[in-house]
Image (cartoon, rainbow, N blue to C red; front, top):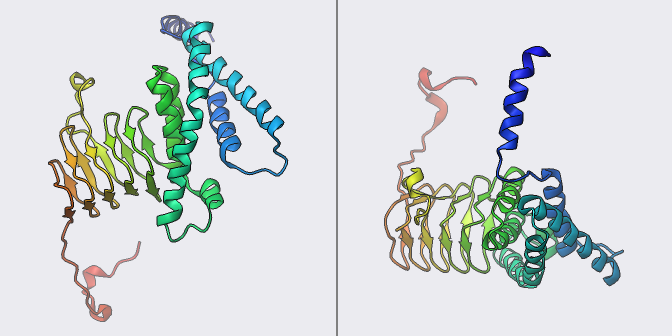
Length: 276
């Protein structure tokens, strides 16, 4: 163990020099799951009194995480009260998101199915609560919350992004939405879409780096849209696998044309017959 003494000293010094304490990440996950359970997952045993107790427990859980970061009881209490005051508005926004999925996804049979089984809706839920905390300047906690959704769904939405009402993520795996992205209302995004930055240098950290998506835009799978000055005009359709770094006018259809050949495979050349 003596060989570890120097490493132990270095680790201790590093932890002493941190700007704040670290909360237990398992408690963060529990808060996200418990709030989702209370808001959306039906249980026959729920009564108003039980829901009040659940909200009180959630209040205490969020308070304990924030006070660990800030070290200020007053600041933690203010942030928790603000969050729960805004929660009815967040709930209404999320109900609109779920209804949008139910309206446009032919595979969705009920709102309960969306609450129980749709990773895109769960990622949107996590985004909306983390975005609220981000706006309250509780910086590290929303990042941890958003990364939990990323690990669970494969959908990476920075809490600093701005997303309008009736947001619809279909499938969702591989979606990346950067910090300064602005998305309007009634936007639909499919799996593998990237709304990213053209330049990732640290000097541009405080600049608008990610694109703007206006109302009623549909972005199909694999599309990449980059740049802080790039705007996709309203009611445009962005086809799959396109690469966009310039403005797209409203009511546009953007698509990538590739050549696909279909032939009889009975006489394939030897070089094309292989086994993996």
